[in-house]
Image (cartoon, rainbow, N blue to C red):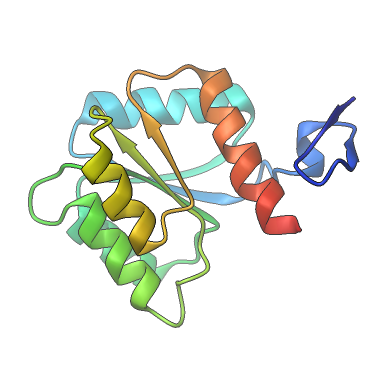
Length: 144
């Protein structure tokens, strides 16, 4: 039995994460979309949707309900940062947890995403354990 930020005991991951939540995975690399989706499935997530770039992701967000967005930072057409801005500026979608995924840990990129209201940030490559820890932080904080 572990604890979350609040110090409240947590018996299992499902106390924090709904494994049936709808997750949107956005990355211009089909290999990365597959890796991220496989990693989410390893964690126990079942309801995954993918998009090739921010433009396609934004269209999907407007059509379907998502509980979490995992987006690459650098993409053609619309970057992850631009997608984050649209999501946070929208009254309908502003509360969707948004985790930025990047190959770079440049302080400027991180700070720009933080200013836009990113829920968390993860640098590639990452393990299932690291992603799970990030998601627990995002949804543990959201529950408080």
